[in-house]
Length: 79
Ligand SMILES: [Zn+2]
Image (tube, rainbow, N blue to C red; front, side, top):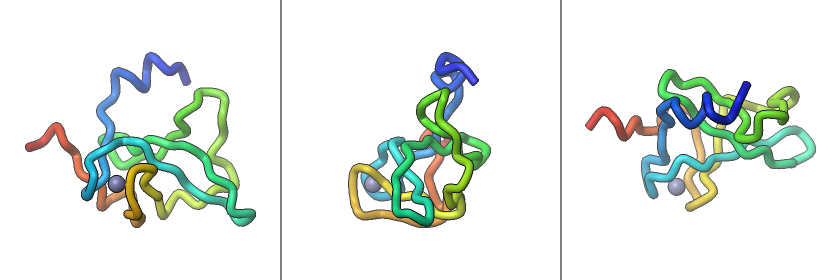
């Protein structure tokens, strides 16, 4: 997956602070930067990173304390 591809895709944003920078955690508590795409898909921010082993059912916002299901993120392009 190329980063240009990600740039062309619409990303969902945090319902509180309206940024797209999210991360997910694995069992070791490590953080992986991700974006949540328009269709609710969780993808790694870096093209060579893998989301394998990370819990994609809950995303955490980098900008505030919000966390929850990727489905609860807002699609800022739809009003
Ligand atoms: Zn936030």
